[in-house]
Image 1: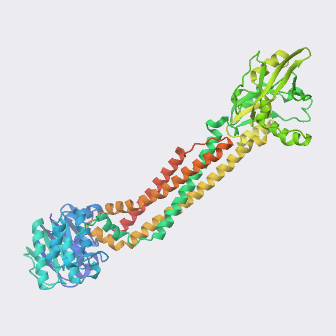
Image 2: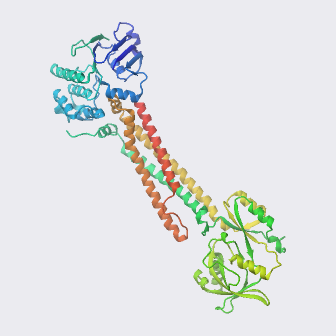
Image 3: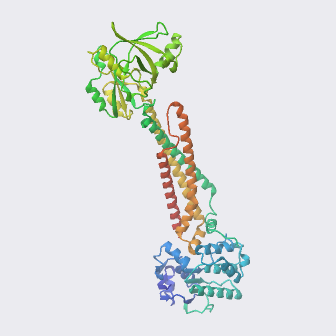
Length: 214
Length: 401
């Protein structure tokens, strides 16, 4: 699945963006399937806004975003849900877990939507990220680091061609971050999926094919 | 790890904030509204059956009226003035709402009745005949052919009532039951002077519809031909089968022509107006109540969805489709609507059964189960309700996208 970004500019940030040269805003970009993209975005440059545009949470921009045949401005709700369920998975900065559900229930809500990952694999991945013992804890009671790891596992419990991540390791220590990077790489490889990661500072978490400054 | 059902998880997320009080309130309103609606339809349907249906031969012959010409000071002395001419009969046939016209033909020969077991009980009397199709019942033995010595008689129930509650009490005579009267045999002498014939008369039934002493038409025709061949046979009263006697055009026709009728015979038609008013009133109340119930139900659903807004947005972000979530909500709420409507249907079935049982002793036969109109009303209200609720669910979800 190819991601095409064509001269997009967030309407609320239009004036600010015109003051500096961004490699993403107002540019024409094409990301091919399987690519690993890093977008470095200093504070206030619209990193989260971009991620929200990509997964269809916001539409207040000029230009166009296209996931292969789907143009995000014109996509209907059923097509959008299809795209999210089977092609584009996302880890948002604020994790967005259901606080009233347990860790396991949070994962099951996602896993049972497509049933493409086994319960056994899901448990194994939790084990690898060190959150298996928190299975029955309410998500709202978990630490930020634990919540981030649950959000990572959850994003992998579906088939995907692209994994979009917004500061996915911001609450993780070095060891946990390494384990998460390894798991994500393996599962992305398994799905032959591309990765798009946005973060504040430069990093080499993955073997990026392109690095862009927002 | 214990397997978790997807629907249970979604239910936990979307229905956790629901207000059960509002849900029960709306379901009770829906149940009451639907019950009232079905009762209104049943009242209308049952009464239509009694008035217009196959039971037209029963004692609620409200659509049968006997009319006569009003006797005024001017017409008092003229014997033929009270008789109907063929042209007048034709005009009555063509009057609004009139479906059929029959002639009440009376005897043009003397009739003298005596009771042999009660020595001294004797009286001159009159007889009348109408075509059988206008009678409320034709009991067994209601035939007469020349040569038969037995004459069946149908007596107006009013006459028996007049005797029992008026004459018998004032004269200190015994009151008589219908079966006693039917057991008595009268000696009937018809004709004058040497031209007389003797018959035995027996009351075989009673009529609520026609205030007269009725004998088979064949007997009156025979008697008039034999004993009064020269007297013209014209009817003094007509019996009408009328579709809706409460129609103003029909009553205006009677008034214009100075025709009289027994106003008491219109009581069922008056009652029909009352019943129709009651059914309409109940129907309007039912629709109002159902409307309120639906409104509360829809508000309940909208509020539940609004309270679960965050979970809903997150489910959509994870790839749950709006259609799946709408169908999930429908699967949860439509069975509740069906239960409320089902209970209303059970009440309607019970009410029809009770009404049929209660009216049977009054000689009115009603079906034991509600008819097609009641089911049609139920299906229609279910369809309208479900479509409103579906629209509300889809609209609320669309607002969350």
